Image (cartoon, rainbow, N blue to C red):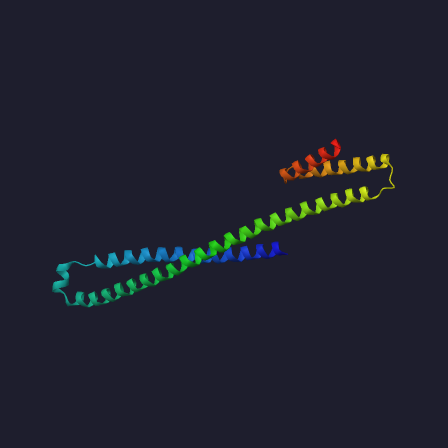
Length: 178
């Protein structure tokens, strides 16, 4: 249940991150285009024509207004991108936290399974030792079966947890050497 929640939360955060990143990149492109348009407008007319033509002066008013509009759009893009950077950082941090939760969940699952197997072994051994009416031959057969079961468990755990396997093997060796 927790794993499903974390997976759905990760999907949601990744979608939001992708949207913000796309908007950030779009704003970057739009700023470059606006700057290029301003440069084009600034360099579009000849100074000699400006001096002698009334019509050119009228166009100059429209051109300066368009430049102001482009500059105001650039400032809007800059402020939006600052906000987008903050949001992207927030989503990245949230993704890191979700990844940490996944690793902790896996660690807890592994520890729980280790504890459960240890409890099973301990209860089986104590049940055998508490039952004093069992003959020595039966007890040795039961111990042998349990040792075989423990060795099978070690075989299954080799790829998952080497330290646990070493601990189990050491305890088996100690029991056999008694």
